[in-house]
Image (cartoon, rainbow, N blue to C red; front, side, top):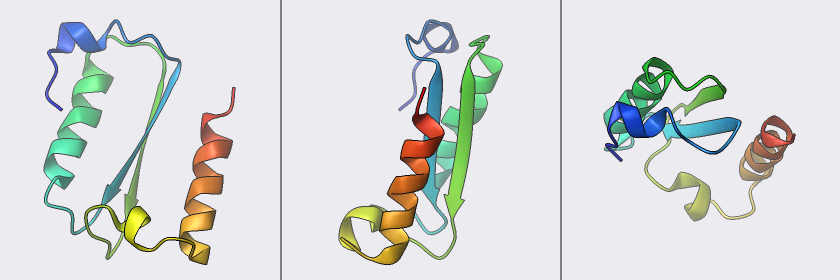
Amino acid sequence: MNPGVEDLSRLGTKRILIFVAEEDYLIVTAKNYYEKLKRSGWKETVELVENEKEDHCFHLLLGKTIFVKRLLASSRRNMSV
């Protein structure tokens, strides 16, 4: 999760959606990745979505709750071409 900036500028996708959880021990790493991607020269779309009061892998642990269904639907909408 810590690629060089020069590697990020060559990503072969047009959109990246990064989900982070407020109480996740990796939140700083994820936010740093987001900022590094924005500074890399990569010209496409990147979005950071922070989920309040959630922990690491919350989307897997909650299973089929309404919240997770909405989260997945949102990600599909945001990532569709």
